Length: 191
Image (cartoon, rainbow, N blue to C red; front, side, top):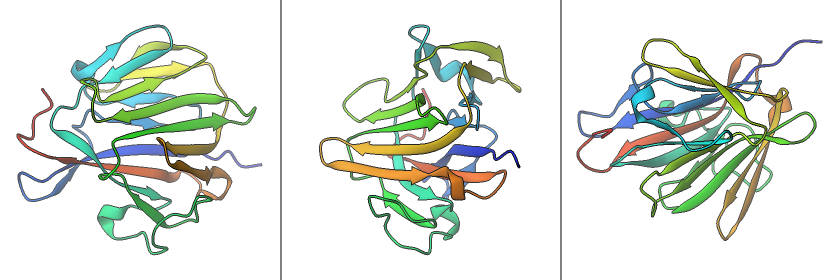
């Protein structure tokens, strides 16, 4: 039995200086198969309780979500995702003001949740219901390590209209399963 690693990467896209992808110096979370959340810039990260945290990303908003593909690279060839998402599909998140992405393990139980609400100062909230410990990450980073199992699925709930279901069993081994891009709306600042 092979161990599959599912990666949920949020890649920061800037539009102020010729749309370029910044992976190693962004403040966006990366969720891996055990439900851990890795943040590259700890300075934009705040802990609110033993199960929740948030990331401050002023002037940035979600752009596209890709399922087993990167919309930025033009890899999403299956068109717009259906409610039971098909591989290689994408969703335009830029028109949505309120959504939650819940990621479940093999119990099934939500082990990580990422939420976006454009009307809130702390725009991205992270919740790990079973709790987490904070570890030193890579350079200027922090890791939230939960007490959960391997990730098996995700549900994107668009408030108040509906849901999209993602099954991670078909994700390629050690490859990105869900990809969400962020675009700068003005100022291109994390502060």
